[in-house]
View 1 (cartoon, rainbow, N blue to C red):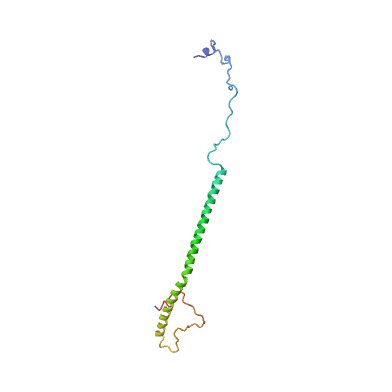
View 2 (cartoon, rainbow, N blue to C red; view 1 turned 90 degrees about the vertical axis):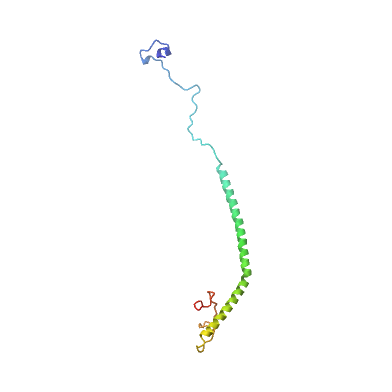
Length: 143
């Protein structure tokens, strides 16, 4: 289709002869342009997250407290059992010590029989204070 047919004129001599047709807004105007950030609200709110975290933390601390009570009770039971058996263990150790001490005195008497004025079992240290050996053995280098 030609320009002459569109405008119902025989033709144009110049562009200036064309009628002015200007585009304009539609009736009522254009809709407003959306330029603000509109982030959709997805997920829980900050208050809900805070309450959930606080609840989880509180429950965890409650569980820790329960565990501490149980652990404390087990530890006290273990210490009570050790306190109950301690006299028996001490008596056995005392009996073992007396046997070893007697063997040591017999060995000392045999070794030092030729030394004049030697008293078996007398300390060479004159502190007046008796101390049991700390190693559990009387004289490890002798045996």
